[in-house]
Amino acid sequence: MQAYQIKAGQQIAGLELVQRTISAPDAREVHVRVHAISLNYRDLMIADGKYLSTGDVPVVPCSDGAGEVIAVGAQVTRFRVGDRVAASFFPDWVYGAPTAQNTAGALGAAVDGMLAEEVVLHEDALVTIPSHLSYVEAATIPCAGVTAWNSLFVEGRLRAGDSVLLLGTGGVSIWALQLAKAAGLRAIITSSSDEKLERARGLGAAATINYKTTPEWQDEVLRLTEGRGVDLVLEVGGQGTLTRSIASTRMGGTVAIIGGVSGFGFGGELSPFALIGGAKRLSGIFVGSRSMFEDLNRFLSVAEIHPIVDRVFLFEQARDAYTHLEKAAHFGKVVIEVVK
Image (cartoon, rainbow, N blue to C red; front, side, top):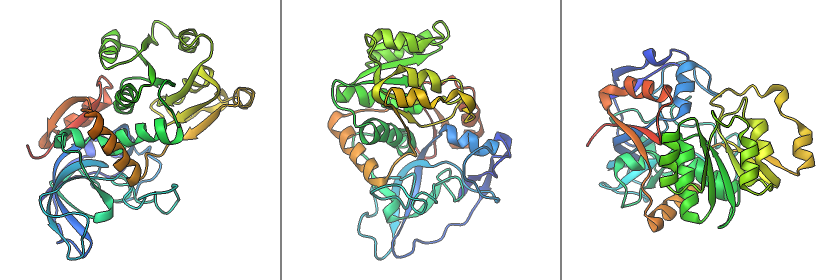
């Protein structure tokens, strides 16, 4: 079967299509024909050699994929041939709190991921995808969808009527906007594009801020919340935005750190006094467990949410998909389709 592989630090040009053999599933393994894969900013970081944990040999990249079960091991009980499934970002983190052990094997970094025609995974690493979603839509859930769910409802503990600030219109932020709308949250979202902000309003954003025309956007957040601040900020930027995110948060509120699109060098911009004086907390979000994924899927099924897909590329266009994501002009998720 065909698969892509890349060695960390080789850039997008290092992504190559190769022939690989695939073994029959062991007793508790499941053989999946992959239909679609979605990209995350993490995949660009791995290509650039800037991710937290990578190996020294080429790996199949990408954590997010959905497909059809085509064979199961003799002791598999959770799935059968024909089931529609998606892979969990952390195959070993099934439930409970994250540990160094259960988060060590994230797909597509130090171990092979989903950018292949077929994969074999342990049955505990898979979930059944909602029946109302296509494979392309389901492929967007494992990282961005679960991260948004964890940020809003697990770590953030938000309830209907609470408020959230979303930075930008990438995969996690748009997922969070859709979940927030369905859960009765008040969402404020930022972007440098008025066109994207108009689309966000169509998805249910209560208020929008163009951070190019309003560089001190934290002041606008406070104005929109009558000086109180939001209950939660989804911080995807990092360097240059964290101070403003903290200032946008209410006393006792939370800043969920979910990414570092502008870099992780916070340096002197993080003031402990801003946290102490406001009784605010920073919460690092490392995607989430399989049980969170399953909770999210139940919510999606009840609310009949369809994720926003920016663009779908063919399998042989994987490099083009990476380049499109790198340009940061997308709204929602970028997907590579393997099988229609």
